[in-house]
Length: 109
Image 1: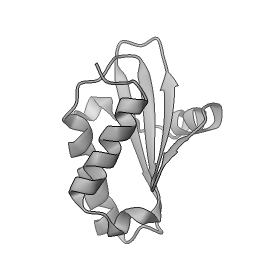
Image 2 (image 1 turned 60 degrees about the vertical axis):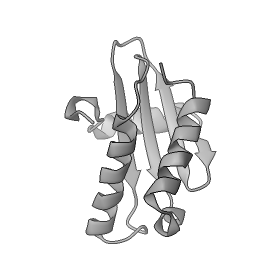
Image 3 (image 1 turned 90 degrees about the vertical axis):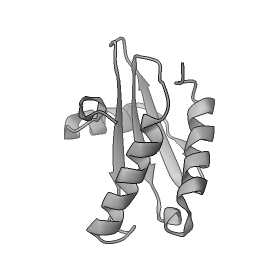
């Protein structure tokens, strides 16, 4: 995943989370905001209850690699929040769950 397609600013996270309803699926929550921009952005939020920094960074790397495999439409911002249920899942299970949700959100080309 390219670095330019990642949300980094706190005000963007706050705006998206407060103005949009979450789509919850098992241990994941997706907040999607439609925008008129010609690009898409993803953000990740992983709390400290998941584990220490090494575990949280591993999950972020896994999420980025899963997201980078697909082609997306332009004009949306998406935040993925992870709950503690992810600790017992394998990479393949996480990948299949994220792909299911992405198809239902209609953000693929």
